[in-house]
Length: 208
Image 1 (cartoon, rainbow, N blue to C red):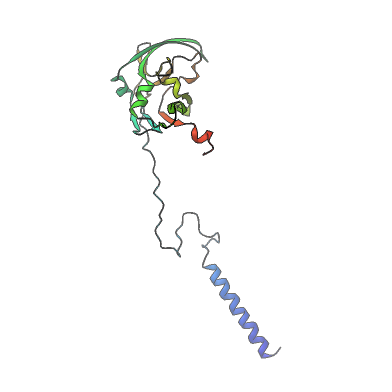
Image 2 (image 1 turned 45 degrees about the vertical axis):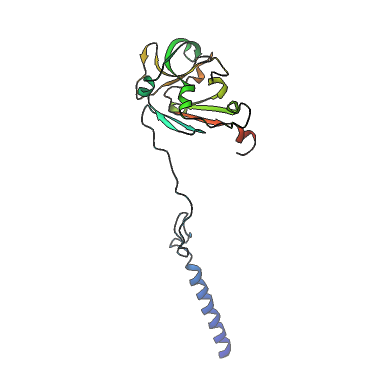
C-alpha cells in the first residue's frame, strides 16, 4: 500500500470520529435522548404557554357549583341550612326496597341561580339546551335536564336536602340531592360534592 492511500484512509477515519462526537452531543448519558419536559440547551426563549391552573380541593361537606356559570362558588351544608327551606315527601324504590321519607332542603334551581348560569339568550328558550351533572361520593353521578329543575317549565322539586325525616345530615358528608318526582332512587345523590352546569350544543353540533 502506498503512502497516499494511507493518508486518505486516515482522513476518512478522522471525519467519521468527528461525526460520532457531534452525534453524541444530542444524547443523554443513557443514550435515550432528552426526556419530555427537559430544557433544551439549544433554546433559551421563554415559554409562551399559560401556566396550568387547578381548582382548590374541596373540603369535606363542600359542594362546588361550576361549569357554564358566571359566578362559580362553593356552598356548605351549614350555609344551605340558612337559606329558605322546602319540604318534600317522597316515595321511591331503591336496592333496599320501597322507601318513604320527608326531606327538607333548598331548591336546586335556587342554588344554581346564584351562580348565574350562562345560556344563549339569542336562541329561543336557550336554557332548555342546558343540563346539570350532580356528582357525589364514590364519583357517583346523575344528570338533570334544565327543564326538570326550572319551575317555569316543571312542577317537580329537586332539592339539596339538609335533613331526612327530621334528622340533619352530617356536615362533613354534605347534602343529598333529592329528585322528588323520580319513582326510583338512582338520582338521589348522596354526599353531593359538585354541580356542573353545561349545554348540549358543543356535543350535538360536533364541536367536541
